[in-house]
Amino acid sequence: MKNIVFASTGYKPEIIMSEMIDGAIEIVEHADTCLVYNRPLTDAGLTWGELVDWWREQNNMADADDRTVALSLHERLKRSLGSEAERYLFYAFVSRYAEPDAMSQPALLPQVYVHFDPLTERQRQFLKKPRRLARERMDFLLLLPGGVRIVIEVDGKHHYAREVPKGSDNWEVAADLYSEMVAEDRALRLKGYEVFRFGGKEILAARENLAFIRQFFLDLEARFWCE
Image 1 (cartoon, rainbow, N blue to C red):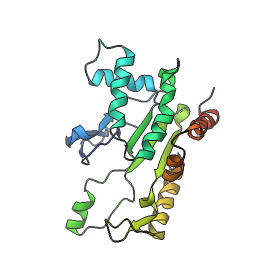
Image 2: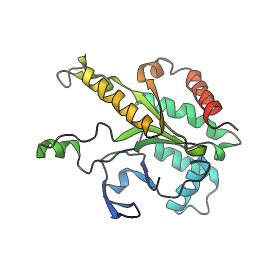
Image 3: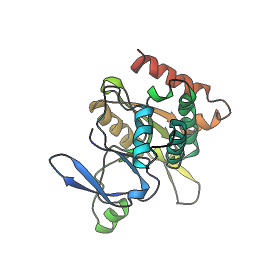
């Protein structure tokens, strides 16, 4: 994995491959709307400590202590969260970063590009070109020891229904959207990813007590990265 493009906050970045053979990329437009982690991954996957160290280098914070750098990174990641339910899941996980072993904990990356179409959806519509990718970004990604890759998705109504007409708040079940979603999940699993889904409604219903999300991450830890 040479480049991880994540924490997208706005316009889709325009990406070119500056070195085809080496897989090097360059963002030529909207570089301020995402982050690109381009360090080699270690056997530990990607830890919070490694991400904090990278953020320190990217932002010329050599003289800042770990806490200051980590808080700065945390604020930037929060800005990319796309829904209230995503924010609650993120908060439930990053509470781990207050523990003594924070820097050895996995980094939870939000809004990660797993596929990339150089054209936007609007450009494809204008050019009358068919959509090539069902999904480009995942809500969250954990890169764990042993090459384990865990995708976590938070599903809102738009994953399985359409608003008809737009702006009406009248949602109709769309079997094609659901089929598209589960087909993409199968494809990710065949590529070696583990995929876990939360319903946005279940998270919001438990917003006052996120213990079930924290327990999920404890169970995930016991299965995938606990020594």
